[in-house]
Length: 238
Image 1 (tube, rainbow, N blue to C red):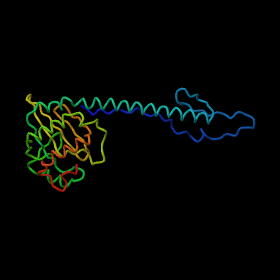
Image 2 (cartoon, rainbow, N blue to C red):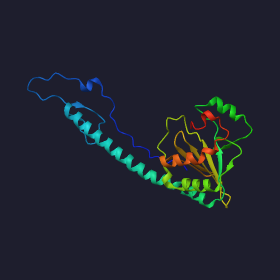
Image 3 (cartoon, rainbow, N blue to C red):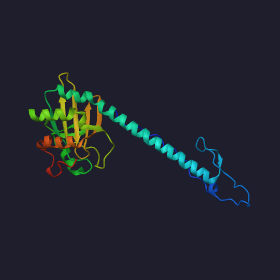
Image 4 (cartoon, rainbow, N blue to C red):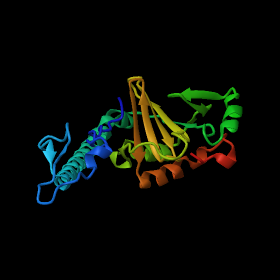
């Protein structure tokens, strides 16, 4: 399912005027100044208006359009956030129906550690999940960790609508948590501590979210002991 991001309406802006539009023509004393002609102006603005009046009307019209656009975007983002969080409810609820969780440790960062990534990619104990590389074998979590991860990853309070790309070199999962239900449905949650994001994936679902600050801290604490193979100097670079 694609990320729900409302498409902002196009902000209308008049094309730059030519110098002739704003040239001051000689007006004999006592006569009314000539008006400028602006074909294709905003609806409701006459094609011929006095120069100063035209600028005033144009400015007010553009301000109204900008305000309307901002309100539309804000309302759309709030609605999108609700829909987007709800879109992963099936994936998150499936966590509560599984008995086993597996932890997968991610390889070095593709942007910040390309050399280390290339070297680690040559290892035989590497697998791909949703196009991202992880070390093998996956590690089964204990009962306490499993309960903590289930609560964290299934809660809608842990996530919010994806706010856009972050200046962190691109999404890079430090860890993945995978599970399979009794109905043989496979799911995974890919966690990036560099972007503070999570990506829920299944054979038919791929939804990306921002993580809440509280869930980030708790996830780091739970997953700390699973840093086993990634080069230690870069194990939490994101």
